[in-house]
Length: 262
Image 1 (cartoon, one colour):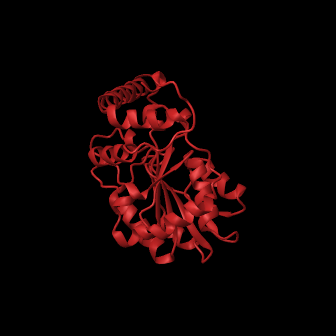
Image 2 (cartoon, rainbow, N blue to C red):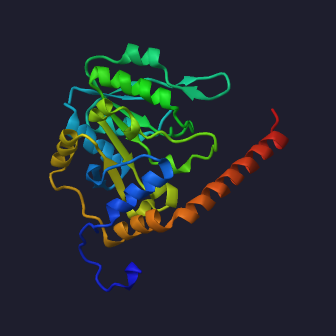
């Protein structure tokens, strides 16, 4: 429909794009997000870089929990911040959990940010509520900002698990919480470069916005249209996608059980 409009020039934010995001989050995940918390960024990695430069001094450190998406390490390092590693603890069954004892040991007074992969990429962990609350409590007590990358939140395949958004943490912990997400993984539209940042705390949000210094590119006319279309009219498609991915997963497991029993 947007292609039928003859003008492909600069565009302004449509009034109905933020409500489309809020409605999707409310109906799919059961958590309320306020439209004033939202701002546009051209990608998760860019958002992490913006948050680092806006919120950290150059001698302050960033904690990551490997094995994890490699830009979590590269972005802080490229922006002259030291990265502190708190590796996930491998379990006997091959899964992982957070190592809170090691986190306590490696965290010093210069650690001021933790980047969380939620759900975790590549370990495929849907973090339990109690784990996130324990992590948030630790970070809150130390004055550490949590950047929660939730780009895979719509792709949870386990029917008995539910994504726990960082924005549903206790209110006193939201003062230092930044959530990043996008329709790109869910709907395979990463090329439109549409990502949103949700920051409940007004002071924290304004610090990030101010640090942008009008250097971000404006959205192209199709980014808003594609994001709105996905979040408004993509419900049935998303349900079929999850069903299809579950089928793929079962096919893979069956093959491994039969052909690779060792």
